[in-house]
Length: 312
Image (cartoon, rainbow, N blue to C red; front, top):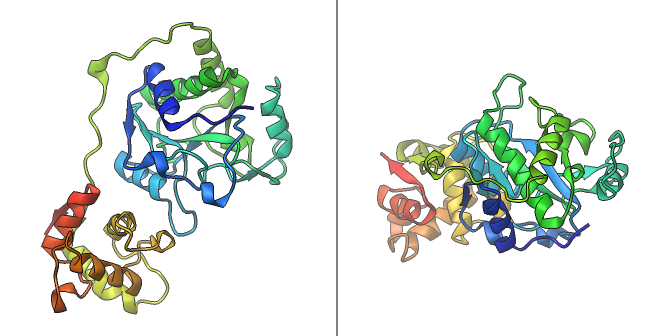
């Protein structure tokens, strides 16, 4: 049981453990604290993303989706072993789990009971790391990624004075979950235990640090097609994946409500984009030039603000 780390303390703990850490957008204030308490913390939970690709996985975990708003964890660990911080505070990663498991983790018991109930709020009590992996049992876990999972878990245990028994997998917390799939949590706890025995954590050599992920790309023609087609479509079909990137930018600009970040360029998104076109930052357009259908100039301006590039 412990008071949650501050953003600065979390960042320092991870880097002191020799990890390469990227601070993603406004991660320090990205949380779900308005939905419930955060803390006291009792442990670290490991997940797999069921996705591929670093940039898209990080964006998904930062924003969440229509059924589960973000952030979906505190950090995303990619295949190269880089930790991307996406949240600080309460995050949507653990869900409801077994109270007996929580008591065992809190007591750092040698054995975990079976997770056969979903009656306790895990988002309140656990740090969460999503690891980029399809979770199909075939997608490999590179050595650099497993090393980073070990280091991230050990960093938080070290910061709070916990042992490796405060590290669990999602499958040990919530009935029906299988993540992380591809390695056992007992083997990972053994690795964390060995690392915590070291007084001075070794640092990964700087030359091996991977480059930051490339900026997302939005295809203007596909976006325009979605903006013209989606408002009249039934339901909320996702006609182009780039819509979600643009909607996330509109949310950050305060022009679109976060629950509407669903990948559907419907009438609300058209209205929000029209507000962007009319704004000074979006180009100050009027009339038909501000009808909510993206143009290259306004989209490029939005991309510079949000960190994506535009292709015609």
